[in-house]
Image (cartoon, rainbow, N blue to C red; front, top):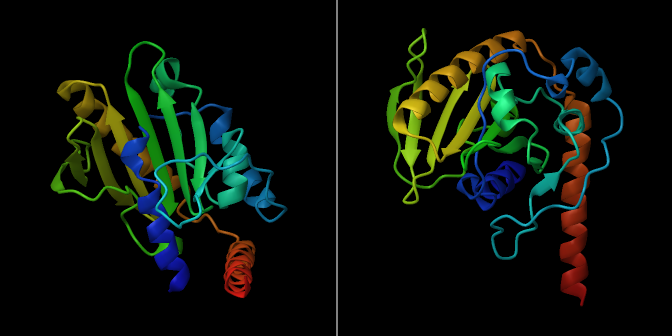
Length: 237
């Protein structure tokens, strides 16, 4: 319970609207990776990560953002498949500008268009692991609406005061959240429909994916021990 509370705090500390988002269509590049291989590698050692990048930290809270050199490294660290870009979005947004995890629980991949000022961010997480279906980090009002896909998926949509659109929904075992900035209404609707359709296929493809819980639990315990040790050291000084 303590770990989940800390994670939720980390999600909101790493506020999604401080970055921007991506979205998906079909075949993805090598970064999507062979997930069977990723699943096998997830049982091994976690990859080396770069220093965390400061992004809206709460006072007194360690920065939850860890940055990675590529998508396979991120997938090995979080232990689950990471949603990237659709094939038809690659010319505009690939490669990712930044590749993060939030405390190794949520993937956060950020893109900048090569043609204009539009920006995208995509977050993915396993609902069963984080215990929530909202990984957006957005605090404001939401409206529920159809994504316009063939299954008439219902999504939650919000818009910030600066015009950034935030969307969240779940499909199968996965929670998704995206932000889209710098596009008109028609483009947004098309992107949302596309994203949700591909997320549905993504969640179906990986419905039987098995997270390495032993590795995840070990990492959680190590982090909690380090936190307790830091508190004891601080109290002793």
